[in-house]
Length: 183
Image (cartoon, rainbow, N blue to C red; front, top):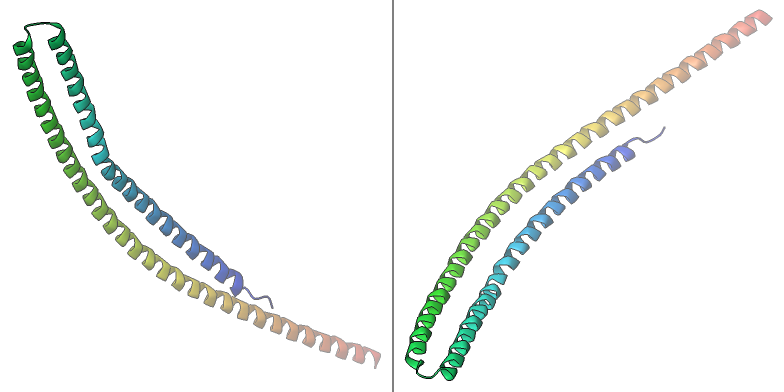
């Protein structure tokens, strides 16, 4: 008799492996998203620094221009100094606001990333619990399926035995009939 439980078991094992691989792929996707969030968070400091350098470079360029004007036009030293002070005040204000804006944005981004991480951790945990329940139910279904296949296999064997017995009985009856015809 052919053994049917091996293909059934293999099928269930393949299904469980596919479920587990999907679970791992999802967890890796979540981890990748979290890594991207961390990378963006880590880039804030360099972005702020680069923008600050750009602002400071612009301030230096204006100072250079004012130095040139002061050197080329006699008697404008007081006016240039007033302009220089006004420019410095504006750039100080800009740099202060720039730092505050980056700090606020960074804090809010951190809060958002932390909330996202917490939510995804809870979601992954809930999903893992559901998958464990699905796998347990899947194993129960496998056991029931194997039992059903074994029962069918046993019934087929019994039917084959009965058919063989009937064939033997028919053969006996034919043999007896042939003997009676000859006698």
